[in-house]
Each structure stands twice: as C-alpha cells, then as structure tokens.
Image (cartoon, rainbow, N blue to C red; front, side, top):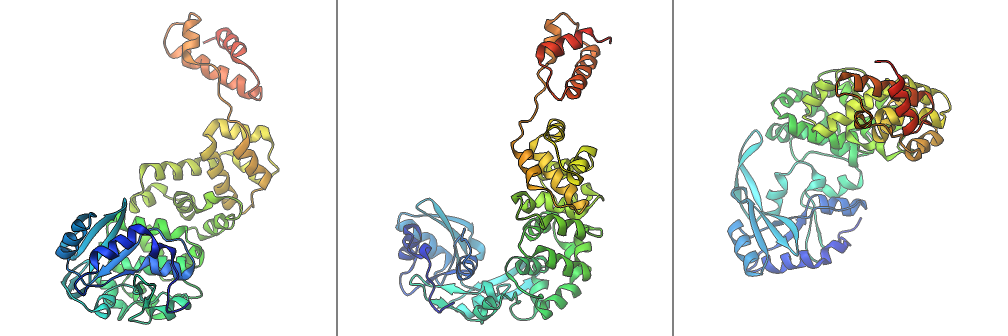
Length: 408
C-alpha cells in the first residue's frame, strides 16, 4: 500500500464530472469509505461515496448547473445523491457530532477532515482519496487496514452506544476483512454492550447477519460471537456451528454454500427455522429456501445420496419430488449435517439430470370421460406412483390407461 491510490474508477467520466461540478470556490471532494478500503485490499468496488467541504445546498446548486441530477436523499444530514451519467454518488458534507442519541445524532457541518473522520465507525473506513489519487489518512486507518485489523475510532463503548448495530458491523467487518483474533478492546466493548442489540430492528440485524454468514472468515468470527454470548442474543438460541462449519467446508465444491438462506439454515440446525427467520426478518423467498433445504435434508433419499454413491435414478427421484434448486441445497445441507463431503459426481448429477415431469394432467382424465371430483385426484396420484415405480419410464398413454383402469 502507498500514499497514492491507483484506481481506474477515479478516471471514470461519471465521477470526473462530479468532481468538476463540485470542486469550486475552494471546496474539495474526496472519495471515502468502502471504495477506498476495497481498492487498497484489491477487492471489487461497487458504490463510491464522496465527502465534501461544500454545503448541501451548494452541492445541489452546482450539480444542477453542471447538468447532473441532484436528489436530496438525506439533505438534513448533509447527504445529496448526485446522478452522473446514470450512476448515483452519495455526496455528504463534512460533519462533526454535537450530540449523539442512539442511532440519531445532532450534527453540524464543517470543513475539518479530521473531525469528519472522528465520527465514523472504524479506522479502515476513515480513509479518503482525492481526485488525483492522493490518499488522506487522518486517524491511522491505513496501518490498521494493512494489518487487517478492524478497530473502532476512539472509545469503542461510545461508538457502539451511538448505534448498537456497530456490534454486528464489528464482527461482520472482521469476518470480511480481518485476520487473526478480533481487536481486544472492540471485542470487550461488544460483549459488554450486548444488551443494546435488543433495541435494534429485526430488519437491520438481518441485513448484517446475511452479510456476515457468507464472509470468508464467518466461521471463526461466529465462534467468537458464540463464546461472548452475542450469537445467542442475535439468534435467540444456540447455533449449530458444526453444521455451519461443514457447509462452508464445501465452498470449493458449490457456490450455493455462500447463499445467506442456506448458511442460516445450517446455523439453525434442526431447531426453530421459523423463529430465526422471524428474528432476522428474512424475505419470503429466503424463508422458502431455508425451509425447502431443510425438508430435502430430512428426505431418506437425500440421506442415501450423501452417505453412499448416488445413482442417477436416486437423483431423479429427489429432483422430481423437490425441484432442482431445493434438491441441490438440501443435499448440501444433509451432507453438512451428516459430516459427509458430497461427491463431485453427485453434485454434477443434481445439476445436469433432467427433472422428471409427470406427463399426465387432470384434464386428460376429464377428456377421457371421467367426471370432475376427488376421484380424479386419487387416480392421478396412483398413476404418479406407478410412474415413479417404473423409474419415470411410463409415457402418457400408458399412464392414462393405468389411471382409467385403477379403481377409485
């Protein structure tokens, strides 16, 4: 790492246009936070946040005058989203806290980069870069970043009390960017302030946990959280770290092991999935993925597949019963529970074996002369059983004959 940042995104026309628009009358603009941190670590950059000495009203006025689109997304707190060449940039005026009260804070705008840095969460997030690539490090964050150390700015207890979500952010950032053990002072403060987690909304907690469980260092970090009592406070129960560890041990075999819903299903073990889904306010799609994987993991066919060499017929049975995505997730989860590494051939079969599609429909029986009613469903199910018993080889005509010949 050097005092100059070599980043292609600094030369992107969309960002250059924002710099050109706002850097007037002595005002300065610098990129800050994630874009700078990730570039220094050689990681992908998605959003680019900017800080400026210009007041919010000046940002709006100058952006509009330059033909850019200013959106006052948080103008009372100094933030204006400037859309340039179709790309949004969050531009926030330098601030310092006058008074903090929970997640909110009374702030005043200023021109001191050091004061602005002092109100941020971690030193690695208080790195700035100007349009020429000059790196500005008011609080020594570069050294922490080089050491892969997530360290609170100032007093960790105070930083956490300003927003108790910072407990989870501390662990999530360590899982994503840290190495070795978490910072001792930060860890002690997080453990001491754990009761503050109860004040957070389920949505905010869920957002952090989704990111944490898929991070590279998730397992070691969750183990630390469990020892401190923090993980149980978040989940409401003891986590199944053995199953989670086994699942993430399959990372090289399947990218699905980094799906938040599947990671959380593993962490829940065989306990209350509904409870965890509610505590983390998971989406309907995430809930369904968790529950589907858990159902498949309990299917005897799935257990057979993960404990013995799978046949294509067994895989087809599982695919027909649950669908491809759920079957694949479920086999991974079952493998983790049984501490059995899935064979690559099994995973290939799960990805490539055609999903058997029952060729007979209820309307086929109605068109053949049966009256609508429960008898149609009974006959269809019996025909489906015969189809499964045949290894899915019976065609539509044979199944129709089977259904019509079967007594109701």
